[in-house]
Every structure is written in structure tokens, then in C-alpha cells.
Image (cartoon, rainbow, N blue to C red; front, side):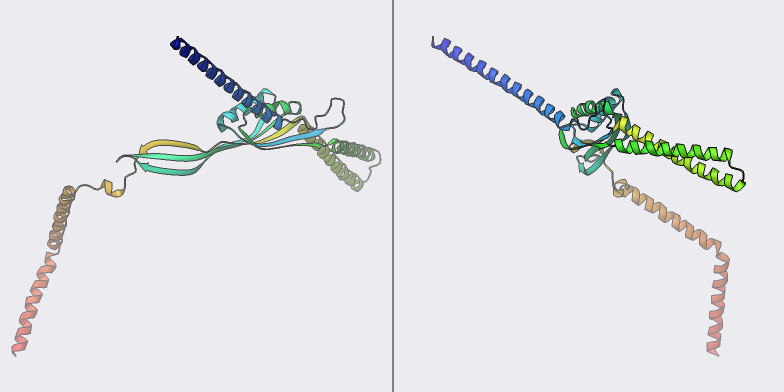
Length: 301
């Protein structure tokens, strides 16, 4: 009876523990989901989203810096998302920077090379203005830690209007100058001056058109600048040890044999040298004996 009671009590305790663990896991999952949702909400942009019937025109830009788990994988995910939503990548600079390198000799021929490095990437993408919020929320899935996000919306409605008015005035001036040239331009000097004025007006008109196109392009496609980084990484690999010059010297026996050979070759050279100059040696020896004999005779006298 006591055994059955103990068994029942043990079963209840185990079930309670399992239920608690499951509840804790669920709480952790909910917390992680809430954290991801919070991050997405933090960098989401609803700034200056113009209505379809509004006359307001905005140039929207975003600048975001954040940490990811893996820069390379996040880069590919962001590039794919950009293409998916009709955008394009204008700049990307994925690079690794070595922070430290340690060489540890583990055997006579092997060395453990430990490299500490950081990976970063600066990305600039352009996406349709209507897809800016969607792309930013997609990018938020890659964020492990958000450093900052700056989102701007510059109202260029008046600038567009001013540009259009300037373009209209330039076009009207060009037409009046052309009519004046065709109807009243008789003298060469007057015609040349009018032609120069017309060329300047057309150049101004072209500049206004290009500026208008540039503004429309910036309105239609928002620019997002991203700075990605990850925790410092560690790479270890075993490489062949680099031997010093002394490791390549032969043993003493070989060095002695080489020294004997070198000495013999040197002796041979000396013998050959003296053989080559034997006439000079003979003349010198003869001269020495003659001089000695002559000096002795002179001393006796």
C-alpha cells in the first residue's frame, strides 16, 4: 500500500515538473516572438505616407544600423527581399577585418593558427516608395540588436512646383526668341546674339527637365542605407610550421666532408697558381742568388 502511494506521489511530481517546463518553454517562445515583433515595430516606418489623392510629394530615406547573427546570410536575405519587392541594390561592401592572429606551436611540424576577425557590410538599396514599409519589416527579421534607425521624409512638393514653373518660363522664352529670329532677324550680329540666347534658354530648360526627373526618381524609389555587423568570430586551423634557417643546415658530418672538399679544391687552386707563374718564380730565385753573391763580393772588398 505504501509502495503504491509513493509511486502515485512520484507520478504527480513528474507530471507537475513536465507541465512547468512546457509552460516555461511556451513563455520563452512568446517572449522571443514579442521581442521580434517589438523590433519590427521599432524600425517600421509610417512616416509621411502620402495619400493617393494628396498633392504632397515626399522623398523618403532610411538609415539603419544593427547586429545580426551572420552578416553573409543576412546580406543574401536582404538582397533577395529587395529584388522580390521590385527594388535593386546600388552598393554593398561585405568584408572581414582581422583583429588578432595568434600562432601556437603544437608539434615540431604543426602550428595552430587562431584568427579573431569581425565581419561587416554596408548596403545601399532602393525600393519602390510604396514598398518601403514592407521591405523594412522584412529586414527586421534579421535584426539581433538594433543600434539605431533614422527615417526621413522630405516634402518636395514646392520644389517640384518651382521647377515646373521655371521650365514653363524657359520654354516660353525659347519660343519667343525663335519667332524673333524667323521674322525679324535680318542682321548677322542680331541673329548670332539671338541664337546664343536661345541656346542658353534651351540649356536651362534641359537642366530643369533633368532635375525634375531626378526628383521624381527619388520620390518613386526610396533609399535605404544599412550597416550590418556581427559578434567577433574565431577561426582556428592547423598549418605547417615555418622553420628557421638553422633547421635547413646539414649535420656536422656532412659539413666536415664539405669542408675537406673545399680545402682540397683550395689547395689545388694554389698549386695551379704557382705552376702558372713558375717562370717568374725562377727569375726571382735566380735574381736573389745573383744579388746575394754580388753583395757578398762587395762586402769582402
